[in-house]
Length: 355
Ligand SMILES: *Cc1c(COP(=O)(O)O)cnc(C)c1O
Image 1 (spheres, protein in one colour):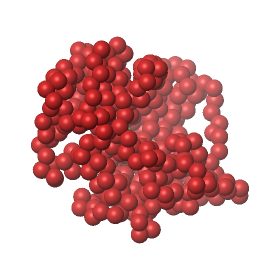
Image 2 (cartoon, rainbow, N blue to C red):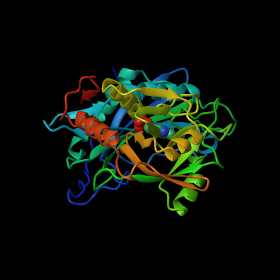
Image 3 (tube, rainbow, N blue to C red):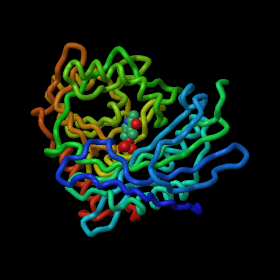
């Protein structure tokens, strides 16, 4: 149990206008959680303080060698007024796996969840209530030792910030167009692909810019060795429904193990679908498309929950998925997961945690 000191702001900001749509990740609440770490001493001084700039030496290691990691989850205002988190234990566990891979200190799961809960409680007035909105929670850790040698840092900061976010698709679910990238790669087995860290994102930017210029909203990554097996999309995992069977790439060391991915697999199995976690090549997807068996493609991630894919472009092929609209399984998964998150549907798997 952390003994978290709370210093409330004397200058609370104005809450965002309820009638204006919230842009993802632009507005931040009044407070943040901060905790420091020093080798030999461990984590110390957990505190909730006013949201403000942090001060670091220009030599702080995070600026030079990228030792940093983050998480992303959301708090929802349930229909009965409770504040709910969705599977925060999964984020705490994944955070510790990322930390291990990046030679950063772990945080006990209970402390991680406690810090999130206490911060959300302090800023609960910021949780938006309109359909599809939520309070995005961004925990992250950075290396702070002022040192230019290449080694792990001896000091770290763990920080949590909060951002009220709008519906990912203001007009409801919307199919996206995806660019299959066969030149650049995001991660390779043995690298840091399964850690949630900035390095994977900076590796993805150039391909994403290219995709945007071509009129596609996201990149679908192929494996770094054969440029053949499907890995994941931007900040989402990917699913295919081929002739009624739900197929998703197996976790292989270079794919980020998504909480939404895990939830989708569980729900599909509960509903009687055959679910396969295995290698799936882009040729297999193209063949399924040609044979008229590619029923649905969708991405999964905390931000959008379910993101139906209407079109996939690979080499010089533009594949339309189904009728280019929202597949029935995509819609059912979206309705179910958001229904559980908002306390509208029975949470049989005990996924939600009350703040
Ligand atoms: C966060 C993330 C996901 C999705 O994970 P969720 O836990 O479902 O939000 C997928 N891929 C990458 C690269 C990510 O960073």
